Image 1 (cartoon, rainbow, N blue to C red):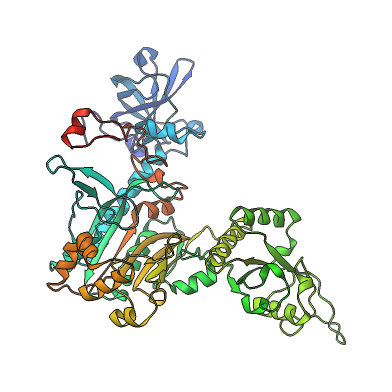
Image 2: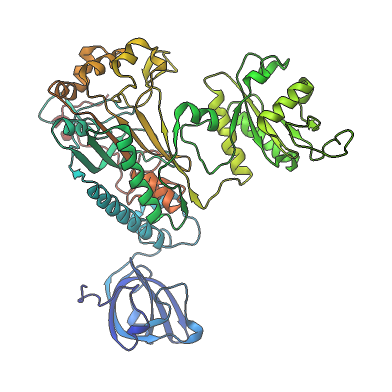
Length: 599
């Protein structure tokens, strides 16, 4: 303890300290004058203590957010003044002296710990004030605790922490690079790493068995609530002589430990996490990052509607989502769902409901559920296009019961699953079907190695270009590119992608073939990834690795809506640092030194 300024923190005093002398230092947060007795809340990063003063002159020059040192004696609060909301709420410090250590301007741009919302741009411009608040202090501590725990876990597994370079060569990995001009080498540029991908694979070729680091990554991309523009951090790791199952076991162990330790008591998916193939995830959930807390599932109804004379569905794939009990929703609910559907690019949103009352079963007077009885009364604009047999088949396939509604999604093959996934998510949210008291984690596996570029319609890599294709060289030579699967996976929690990983391609011949299918010549491969390509020619072990997004993980654990709430000094959504004024202009001299002329 820095006893010159404090014997205790502002969150430390308890009943056992009553009668003791204490020195506290912190920020003056609030004042209350009760007829000559002044109460001041003193705050530091550990908490708040109430200070009692009897001499108003001792507060001369002290305003809110002034830094002061207070010496006094700890006294029990009167019973009717106990504050259960404070950890120090049973006691107060009766001041004997108050010393002003640093003044504060008035008025403040906003109140620290404000109870009303403050504009984000203002908070980021005065981030040092924003960070003083209890919520942000808690978030920073949680971040430090999580990183410490993750490092300990990796060391338990025998991983070696190795730092990789920040200034490196430009290497396209799916986003734009941040480039840094060289003063010494005219016309040449460094780049900030989008990830340590190449270096960690080179470490495997260097004989490092298991590597990890908490790695800063830099990508010049647009910001979103779950994505930081500019800079973000990930737990990055790689294992030599490892299979996909090896890396999955390490990944789920680290994630399970983190969510169990910091999840606030919420239920966490037990080990092992479900492994869901990509194709199955798209079919059932309409997403490769499904929120498994949502109980709704998507069904493929294309065969059932193939010969139905309903023009909007003809010749296109059809998906259906049965929502139990939703037929009782008011008309406005269905209108709002239609508005949402059109807002995401759908032409409409058909539906069929099962009436809550069923027809009597002739002879017995009883009713029976599908598929034994086909007498349910269906209602909706599409019903008239369905024969009795089609109605029965629909109810049987979707296991529909009285009060259920099935929503239909129809579009081109490349879009229908994703649209169905959006409708599934909206239904789950509007009907409050999502269990907020659990963390549902899973792995999505068996991603396609390639996809068609939407603009050029040419084959390109779907995910990580350095992944090993399932089936190796034989698969690349015998299968159509879009049919080749890769040993790559994502870890997903509550619909948020937290981690990507893969078994790496450690064979130069397979690598050359894999890149050739994506349109790269060997010369381009060597020019862009020459160090790794050359290193693998001297022998590289089979290896696999992954990277977990620390910022997104913290966002989930803390229940924050924006990823900017868990970083000390984030950029805003437009990649601007409002505190430091970046990006900013540089001098003509700096431009000349780095051989740059602005156009």
